[in-house]
Image (cartoon, rainbow over all chains, first blue to last red; front, side):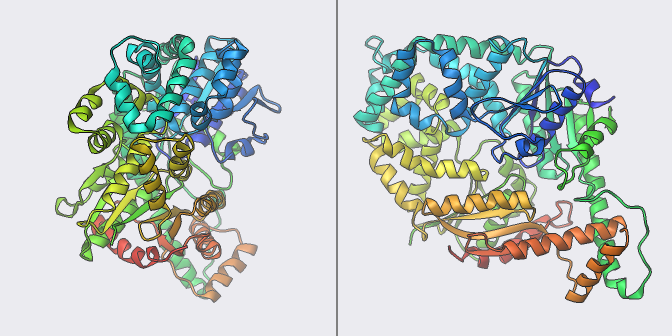
Length: 348
Length: 288
């Protein structure tokens, strides 16, 4: 089966895995493969180093989507601050309410920071594309995720948001509720001081009318995560620590009843040029070079074998089909990897 | 003397966890009292430590999640209040939902532990570079919100700690490929602008192949004219990576050290890690 066979019929492909294994690159390749197959594709990338956008030949922008030339492929950076700013008008229609929120210092300080806001930004964008104004624009969305916990934050965020939205206690904290929760307010004031507690309360209050909407959208996305047209693809390389990470991630997804569909593993064959078939020279002065080369070559082949075996074992233990592919540092996203993904797919 | 915090960070996949374990083993072997910590609850550090022989495994502290919040509340609120607060759904919900809260409790714990007199070092298997820089920003971010109460003075103390080279130093792992080095350079600049001391720059994935200068020249000359076998290709790449590591050097860190890949399937991985740690310690003593 080819890669596309594995993700046939998918409306939404989530690419997950440990850090440093080529997840973003793989997500890009999947997006390109879908676009080449004629599907209108949206790639949501978290790539902080802009590498993906560079490789696709697009000028990265955090404020608007960028179309890739020659393919039905659009790339959007999921950088939470800009994503939120762009989405805010759709989430909150009243200009006055928006100004109120944008002026809040808690909102300003935390907008761009750290994993959880990133998860919220992803959810809002996903909702927009799956159910909202963007629905019908794309046939498939490929979602790149931050390593490990980033994906779990994404799946957990709807519940966390719903808890926040549904919580009477949060009403109390924001000053809207009744008598109970005095302990919470007192504790918070003791911890943060009155000014920050006040600012936090104002922030919660400003968002209060919209909490139900956030929670509803997050829940809709959460339900969609388990739909049959979602594919979760795990990416890892063959190194023992990354294999263990991927196994743990798979278990964490299983515990959340999120199905996994495919494992893509890169067994590093060589870092750089394509293989040339000419045998080495027998010139005597070349001996130290050839000996060193032989040793390194042996080590590389052994690592590749171990990696391939580890990937196949991992896939077998998780009962997943497996695509084993090569990576190349000088050609991070290009013909070589795409062809490898397409041509070397092996189902168990 | 306060305990020294060594935060190991770097691009994903460049050997942070391995370096943190190696450093801990070497410090303990030298007789120091060391705590090994993870800032993440994804289990990676614990899984790696479990690969060592049981007798060699250092204890691992996971400073993350709800446990970090409970420790923070217990430390800073009166006992009766903290017990109820830790169970109160509001704080638990806010903690889970709000960015920055977990990270502040981590920094608070580190600041307190670094003042312990029964510890010499805290070695942290940190997160990737971008996350680390945001983490280090938090005292300033919370401070700009005019935090008072318990948090206000703590933020001041935490900010002082991360800027004190005797108490807090960041070591980076990197790989000698151009785009990884670029991210590492950005990390060095980010740490410099935040006034944080930089220690060792650890170039992983270099080789232990030594060729003298004439052999390297011969290899280069050969590759200009002859197509190469796969083995020669590997060698050429390895030599190029070694050269790149030498060229990029410390990249704004105190001292650069290049180390070859440690094969996890090696007969005695624990011994290899201890040896690696011993080589790293002198590099980690340098400061920028």
